[in-house]
Image 1 (cartoon, rainbow, N blue to C red):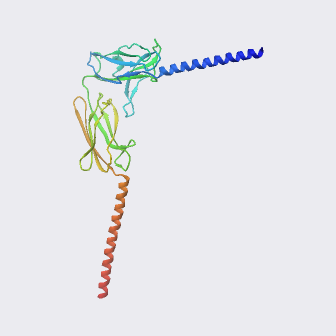
Image 2 (image 1 turned 60 degrees about the vertical axis):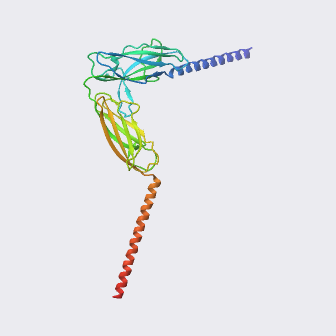
Image 3 (image 1 turned 180 degrees about the vertical axis):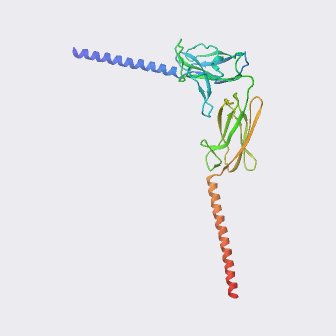
Length: 327
């Protein structure tokens, strides 16, 4: 009897344990599905809004998971980061003073979005510029993160997706972009002489104005004889450079069998006034095999010249000795 009761207790304990594990796995799976985030478009919006005007921005948001969820909206200002990759630095701390041009003040209220499994919805966000707003750029992000209906707490950066919004408010603005570096590079290091490996073209631009700009143009690479061996459209993705920031562009030089001296010619434009930037630089590409061949040829030539000179000296010396004996 005791043995029977003991067996029953063991079976009950095992059943509870297995049930707990199954429940835990289901909850973990549900959390994982929710944490996978949303799909959102557009990824970036460039808007121009006059003072006293407003504009409706349509954002599509989709729940890619098989679990119903709620998309909790969060609006943040952002500024340029210290890096040169163009990645914005979101202002997440509510205690941090907002920028002079506060994007958050332009954005109307956004309701939470109920999304069923695989469901996609379009929402409209009103962006309004007051009559007394500053001219210039207003930069922010409208993000969505999985949450609970009715939850109003601030959602952090983790597990959120969003759209970047750049708003231009016309006025007396200064557009000024300076080219601070144009060079060939390899492994993120500028160089002027290469013996092997792939080569990229590095362009670094600094925005010294007070509004974001999108540079464009054409870059050509020419060989020693002036023939174009490679060219490309600069900044095809229309990336913006924020005020008081520097951005680098790394573009692969997709040209084969490079040998000799090459010139990079860059012709860029930017701004509503169509300002131009022109620059050129040069680099050498001598493959190791060719370089060793040239060194070997130089050694052979030097040795040959030395042999010829030495042989000529011996003939002169011999002739001198013969003349001396006759005398």
